[in-house]
Length: 408
Image (tube, rainbow, N blue to C red; front, side, top):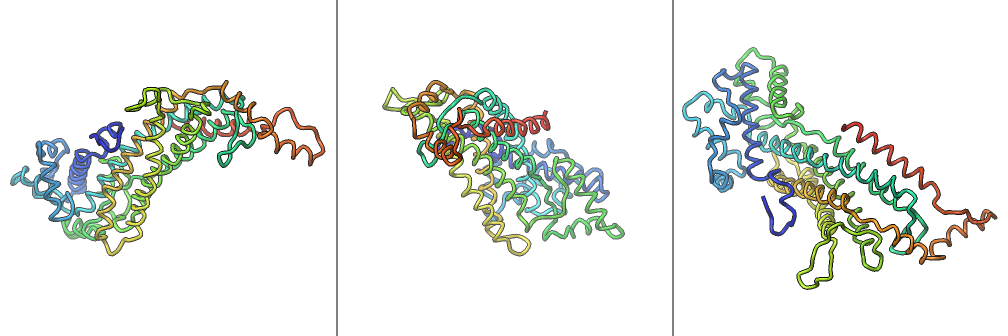
């Protein structure tokens, strides 16, 4: 998948493409057939595996499904029709999708696609934590000017700045790691009445529901939970974790954009972008594109929360439908930004000499607070004014070691 208007979209690969969503929906149908047969609801010859169902979808069928989805408002209806047609008069065709509703398939497929993306984003976060940990330690004593509200403030070190970047990435990583990807199966209105009806009399409802959903969750690598069809927390959590990532990366990108200005030049991108008309330029393109993701992520997550707040009845008209492409855009763009941020950090040029010269040139602009504090205390100014810098760096490095340790 590529997108002319979102440069770098190819870095998300096949994640959350139309093909990936269709494949996830097919996996849901196959997992449910396994659940029905293992629970003793459907006969053994009703079982079908995902590969057999995928083989029924040919070139051009995705376009056909997308077009036909308009009549029913979702892609599951034409997908199931096409699959049943391909299965003919078999028991598999008769039992396919029985006990499910369209929302079960769409919601569960969204969770499958999100889980795949988050596994890749998590890998990028781990790489970023390692890089930033090295920077924080290596440059812990490299002096530079701290700036507040765009103006000189006090001395700091580049190691502390890297530790602050690291703190944001660690926050995002912890939030991402806590996201749950639940199965959503409840039938037409969240009661799973069809499942019990298919099973016939004498089956314990709770035991049957648990048995069937646990099998489906196992097959898909998701968490078995009660139906959440009208409570959209699962979707919002994916959106919130995505934005936490782009927030952290946006902070890094903004600092790089500022510090790479020619008049500052304390850092630089390893391979800047060119200009169509000005050969001398080396634009900080990665930082620009990462900042783009940070600016556009929150409105997408806001749409997810608006949809959740607009929930009504047992399936929300319009708001539920608004989630699908919104979530896809947000998650894909987050994965793109994840990979761009790792590249940015890995190749970042750090100009220690320029940092030192800017600090020296700042003169009294960065010593005024220290002199004021020393005067109040009646003491001579200390040799440096870095406060608890080393402790603050070590605190983030310790957090990083714990996160890396958990993932190694």
